Image 1 (cartoon, helix red, strand yellow):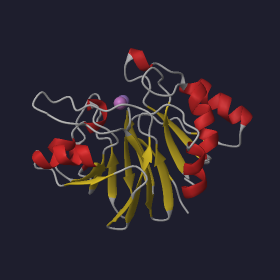
Image 2 (cartoon, helix red, strand yellow):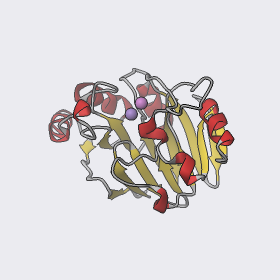
Image 3 (spheres, helix red, strand yellow):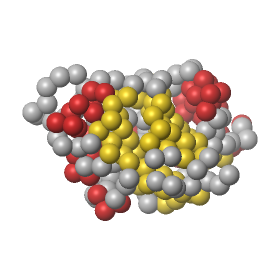
Length: 220
Ligand code: NI
Ligand code: MN
């Protein structure tokens, strides 16, 4: 499986299917990526992104699915702790300690809660934490699903910062950790090199700092 970080929290998984998580890229459109499946962790604009424009099958919370369905997007709702298998891809929705809001003036109703995802495809397991604080049940995500790679926010202010993400990485236990959700804006400035150095000095985990658009191949 190929994992591509497109910037911010946007990750493309390419295997038996093209799975695009949180389709927001600050300086460009994600639409030409033409994914088979879109996953949305929560309603904030830097995660919902181009979901409405993409109009691909989208898996998200029940509340956001309802919003998307009204916009003509084929959306499937689920909730935290649940699992969906779609075209050979298994998706589990995980908790996230965060908020949610849909920034659409015409929108009424409850935007639901924020979440993360565990995605299993081609025998590889990926954890995308979404926007979240550190929480100790990340240990359970490690014990239950044994992710091979974890995408963790390190930007602080709205999510974990590097210190908390270091503990998160150890709780999840994925051998490869990719920092996300940092340096997109000044308010989420963080030093990924310091994060990498600190983790690799104290654990046997590897931190891969990707440039936007850069991929890492994960093989069985
Ligand atoms: Ni958010
Ligand atoms: Mn965010």
